[in-house]
Length: 340
Picture 1 (spheres, rainbow, N blue to C red):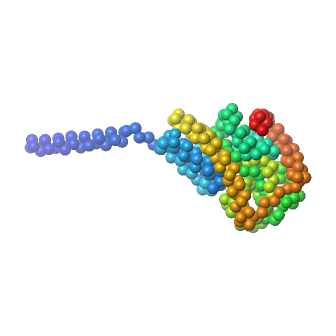
Picture 2: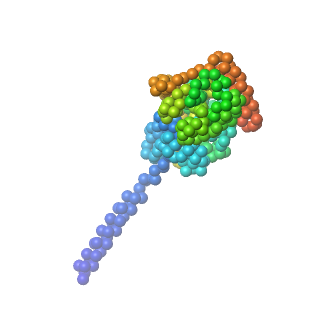
Picture 3: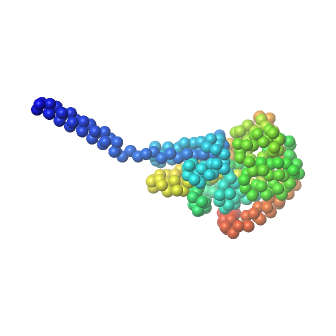
C-alpha cells in the first residue's frame, strides 16, 4: 500500500511540475501580433509602392509587432466601401487620391485646386515642408482619421474612346470623374457631363458606351490596360493628383507608444522614398501607353489658357464657399508660394 501511495505521489508531483512548465511557457512575454490591413483601389502604381515601402519601413522599426497585410486592386471592396471600412475601423489603412475623401473631410479638396502645383517636384517640396506636414497629418482627426502618407500621384488626363484634341471636343461627353466638386464642376463648366463612378465599374461602362471617357492619371490607365478599351488620352494637367494614406485614429491610439511613433516615422519615410519612383513611373507609363497603341494628345496654347481660366474660376468659388475650407486653402497657398 505504501509503495502505491509513493508511486501516486510521484506521478502527481511530476504532472504538477510538467503543468507548471507549460504554464510558464504560455505566460511569457509574447504578445498578440497587431494586424494592419492596407487597402487601395489600384495596383503597380505609386500608391501600391508606398504601401510596400511603408511595410518595410515599419518592420525595420518594430519587427514583427505589427503584421502588415496589403490589399491592392479593390480586394477589400469599392472605394466607397474602403472609405467606410477605415472610418469604422474594419480596415486600418486606406490610400487614395484626395478627391475620394472630400465627402468625408471637405478640407482635403484644397490639394485638388486647379493650377496649384507647378510640377511633381513642387508637390514634393510643399507636402514635405515640416510644419505643413505636421498640420496635414491631423487635418481629419475630428473624422477619426489620421494622415500618415502624402504622395504625388500624377497629372490629370482625360481618356476618351474618340480623339479629343480640342477643349470643345469634350462638350456633351459623359466623363467619369473623381467624386469631388473640383473635378465635377470644372467638367460641367466646359460642357462635359461628369459621372462619379467607382474604378471597378469604369471598364464595363466604357465598353457598353454608358460613358465616353474618364479623368485619371496615366499610371492607372496603363496598370489596368485601358488601352484595350480606349486609345486616346488628352493631357489636361489642370492639377496634380495627390494621394493620401489615412488610418483609423481610434485603432492608432490603441497601439503602444513605440508602434504609434513607428507608424508615423514609417509613413513619412515611405512618402519621401517614393516621390522619385512616382516621377519615373509616370515616364514609364507614358511610354507603355504609346507602345500599346495609345495616343497622347495635347491642347493648343489657346485652349489650355481658356481651360485654366475657367477651371481656376470654378476652383476659387468652390474653395471659398466654406469658411473652414477657405482658411485651409489660404494656409496651403502660402506654403505653395514659398516653395515655388
